[in-house]
Image (cartoon, rainbow, N blue to C red; front, side, top):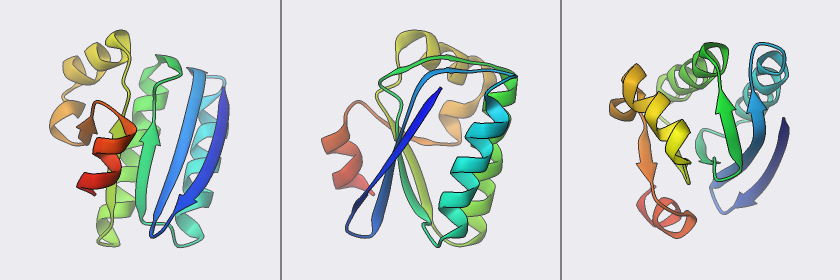
Length: 110
């Protein structure tokens, strides 16, 4: 798993790539919550390079979403690969997150 961040005005964009599984989800959680702890509450997640998510990864997404909502922020995702989209669909996460096809739509909607 790789995790990168960039700033775009009031929005923080993070890119998570590779596999987020039981072994890598603690690092993913630490990086994502550290980002939120620095005051970034308008997050956009670039998932275009994300290949696999486990239930541990889904828990991290959910914890981050709840933390952001408590702080009146927004959390959206874009670029979900078909297999990731399917996992989000089956788990009911499509109803929880704002999900966009590409970066431009995510930047313009949040």
